[in-house]
Length: 306
Ligand code: ASP
Image (cartoon, rainbow, N blue to C red; front, side, top):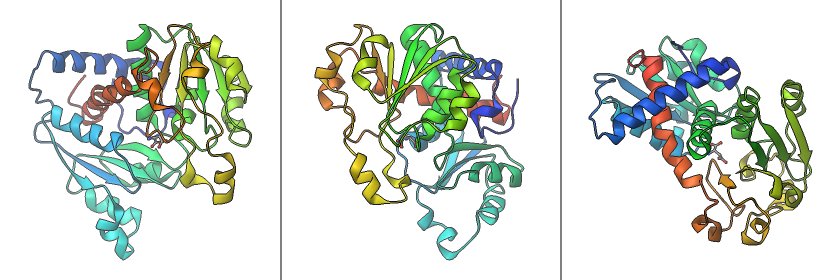
């Protein structure tokens, strides 16, 4: 199987998702065997980050190095000619002369799609505004499979800023391919966009609520997200809603023993630090999944792994 770009999870069918997860597993096994991999030897990844990132950028870079390739790029647009007024189109036309694959994060929705239309080399979306974060979703699914041995027959709550959170937009769509029950738990005003609910509601059962406590005893996974402060048009609106939910030991008293808490990170204050050492926390293991999954994606779009 081969695909050229990774722009939106909507471009993926279940078969493609499963293929990425299987390829990632194989690559992870090779890493665990301490093999030095050379699949991407001689290939160059360009990372263009117009928005802050820690995990996504580092894990893509780590993944490319682990594949035996090399990396160029910027972590801040202000250090590139964008600062001088260069358009995204011209930046892409330039960078593609230097690299074999582009990973781009941009505050504007649709920026990655535009980049893919311009570039002749593969483009991977590392987050476009509040729209999509497809590679995060693939690593989330990979983590769920590792934690539970399956994705089907799980009850999964997506908690937090479901309005602006791009990770939950992509994840909700991908989970609709599986036999799961979803809970969308958001403070008032930050609910999942209607178009996403409508798109998937005939495929699976969804409960929408702002009552986190009532959901806790039922779920197998609590996928927590931070409030996306930078997307609020009015800071006063953010100030009103910040701190409106928090996962702490008290809340978890009524959780299933086997509950796993996931989070795309960064965390602000929505999971208290005391939760980190409990059996519930899976979010730092989730961070690791970014490496094999992004190795698989880079390998597939470059046509160097099958
Ligand atoms: N790191 C994730 C993202 O870039 C989640 C977040 O920022 O809250 O979307």
